[in-house]
Length: 303
Image 1 (cartoon, rainbow, N blue to C red):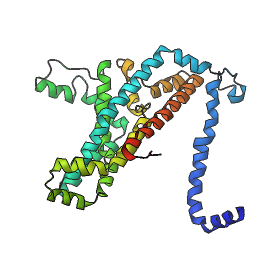
Image 2: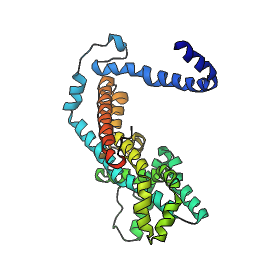
Image 3: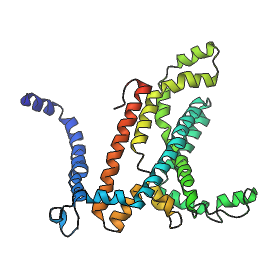
Image 4: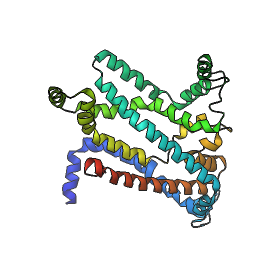
């Protein structure tokens, strides 16, 4: 058996040459670093190393579960993620359908290109733009004052209560266009004859969308929903690090930024690693639950 497999590998050596570098990189950068998870169960100090640091069992897990700041951070993370899911997820589907329904080829390509462009702007650049636009004398305040919608400039990033809305809307604007790609690809695979038959039967555009388009992309919708749920405890660290400031810290601090500050800024690596393990475990549980829920849509789990 082993000899036969070895001969098969030799016959496929071109494919093996392409796959093994990727496997090697995965092992080096994904599997070997998992050895470092042991510091979550230690009072780790860099000078003592992994083997020299004393074991403390579940002390680090108990510490963050008793930390009031952690529950505030968890609330921020879930609130921002749920708002992004509730607003961004259906908006991507809506935008994809609107683009798909456009009949003018040139205009359709322009709309697609314009909607994709923000995705390619890094959060460093986009964050700087948002800070400028949302400032006291920025573009948004100037427009609202000109329209007499407000009487004095609003500090959008200077008030903690405004942060969630700014974070959600800015990410939807940045990534909604890019998120339509899979939906548009799925729509292109729908049999055009279904639309023609529906037209003959007198169905309107909305009826075609509800009866043909949406059922035709139900599988992709379910897949993207599962992936969104699985990543719910990650609320875009890049965005937070750019838009966060001392004035909105109470609403902008999320789990990822909390781990960043505790681990790299304060040097409490064990505490930060324990939080990371906890959030990963919860994410897996959410992924399994979401995968089970897709049976209602697809009659089978995604994974």
